[in-house]
Amino acid sequence: MSTESGNVIGRRNFLGQFGFGGLSGIALNSLLAPTPSRGANFLPAPHHPARAKNVIFLFMCGGASHLETFDPKPKLMELQGKTASEVFGADELKGFNPEKTLEGCRILPGVFPFARHGQSGAWVSEIYPRLTQVVDEIAFIKSVHTDSAIHSVGEQLMHTGHGRPGFPSIGSWTTYGLGSESSELPSYVVMKDGISTAGDGVFQQGMLPGRHRAAIARVEPGKPPFPYLHPRRGGVPTAQEKQLEVLNRLNRLHRDQHPGQIELNGRIEAFETAYKLQRSAMETFDLSREPESIRKLYGDNAFSRHCLTARRLVESGVRFVEILDGAEGRKWDAHGNRGGLVDNHRGNAARTDQGIAALILDLKSRGLLDETLVVWATEFGRTPFEEANRERKIGRSHHHKGFTLWMAGGGVKGGISYGATDELGMHAVKDPVSYHDLHATILYLLGLDHEQLTIRHNSRDVRLTDVFGNVVHDIIA
Image (cartoon, rainbow, N blue to C red; front, side, top):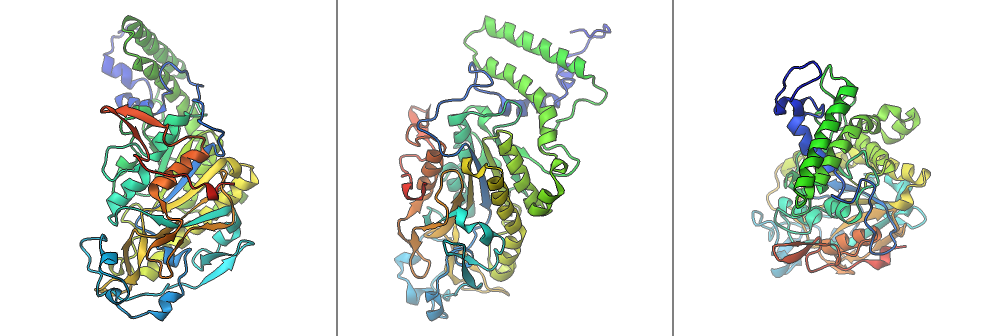
């Protein structure tokens, strides 16, 4: 291949001069390509009228305690000091972390005071002072249960609906079902503060096309959100456009000669989308474009910046945004040897409270909350008793039989509490909600029927909810 100056360059150098990081950039390009043969502006039809257009998924890594956040249990005070085996039957204490013994653990009341807030009278712990401003926008689901008290498995279940790796995440299923409203940004973006226990596999596309895998972005002042975003130093934009034109012409020639390779359409569109991303991503992720009052509203730590960026992303048409908090080191994992329950949850809440409240207030003020579903989740809760072998400070162990998540906006009733655990916070006893039910409800709010959203793989129709799941209609407005 020859350049205008007559110099001969190799294919590898040619791709490298494309300006999006050569072959490494192409890997990201595949995330940005619209569905082959559908065109960049094609949007699949939902199964029914949607209540939400976008999702912002806030995931607290490590297992946030329902007993220290949104589900007070005064009855625990009466039983304080009794052992778990004195209060619960042997069968009730099965199925937890196999590395922990529970029989000798002593009942532990909540360590923080609670108060009612808002017109709804929602119970909120003192560690969330700012969240109390928006409780009337929130539907608390206090009867969630899952299948494992192991961190990695719990994260897999909450993200993919399956306990083993290899299945698509809920973000991937969402973009697979609805496409993207933006031709210049990824449809599924993840921002995180480290690698969680289950790893980045929870954001994978599984058996779905590669474009549905999450684009993992970093939000740091002055740095590009994605690798290889800037064109090659010294590159000329017009030359880059010509290179793109040549690449696409060659790809179209090959596609026309091999009509069975329909994925080439996606690759052609990927190059075009990636070229647009060089311009649009820097603008979207540039928080200095926001007024000082908005930046002050959110605060200035990493989680707050992620929340503000999430609002900018959904405003720009990104379909699914996830923020992982505490991924590095499972910061919400409130064992006694990991800082202790009190310091752990007080510090984690302080880090996230302002950003979450600001996100809901900001979305509402812009008229975006009605069409944006905000979900606060974690892999499981914490036990109603402290650990048997206390190390320095009190802590609670993993608990998957009953805990709390919440949703706001996007067609959800505000100011309600749905379901309940028993008087000790041990079991989900009223209107229990599984992770399959949670997923089915999120998809329903987006206009998708979880039973119809499938892909044929290994001679069976695979779906997010496997063969389970019921929509929780009672929380839908």
